[in-house]
Image (cartoon, rainbow over all chains, first blue to last red; front, side):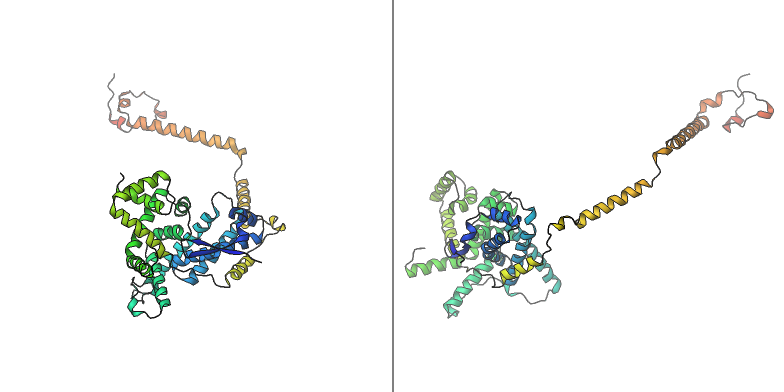
Length: 223
Length: 170
């Protein structure tokens, strides 16, 4: 029987991790894959498919593309198994591949869109930021969905490097050293990058921040 | 006390509790005195709560099956595979072989004597050319008296200018 548990990362953003995979370190699992153990690769796949798909989805904002890219990441890991040497954390390597693929995909997509036509209809993803007009909504679920969409768009509107930094810091909870390696910058530069990114999000999402505080106050919950 | 700009770099690490005690103390000291940074720090905390509202997306059900199918398509090499040379290695070996055959067909070192002879000829000719230059362009030489030679063996003057030069010494 497969044992899974959910780790809570900053409130509600939980990620399901396989307990079996956690008994061995990622590096050990990868070394086993290198030695030809397919089961270890499956454990890594189970452990990282959801974080990876979510990271890529937040980067490219398309579920199909995110899944295709995640498949490509795992395939590259598998292909490189014979050359693997544990010089860095496994996650650094994994998310570095994912980041490069996501950025390439975004750039390719941008060029493709430029090629099509200047009069082509604007994609839904590229629509300008709009606050969900609460008075127009009836169903609470729709409001929740709109709020999530609004937040996703604000993250997607960040410059690429800032976006990667926020996603790895906020949702993957990576340490500064690891994120700096993935982004190939110094820790000091990363801290400035993160500050600028959160400052932009603070301004963009200010209405939601004040709304959530007001809601909590109305419901008698601490903020 | 630190400036707002300096604190901004440490603020995120302070809020996510990864700052060391010295940094934490510096930020706390600044936040106690600067209302703008204090407000920003509060907003960042609330912002992180808002960012948590984004639900996770689950990979499709066929995700694992797809990746396994793609891995199954990957070419595999058994122990016999090590005996078959890799394409790059095979190409390099073929190139090396072709290069060796080509170099083997080049003129061998046995012709050393012939080559030395050619070099000597070239050097010899070079000396003649140099002499010719000196003889034709060096004005001082025009003052040297021309020795009388037997009429039948009279050599052609090297410099035509000498023909017009009258003999000065009698």
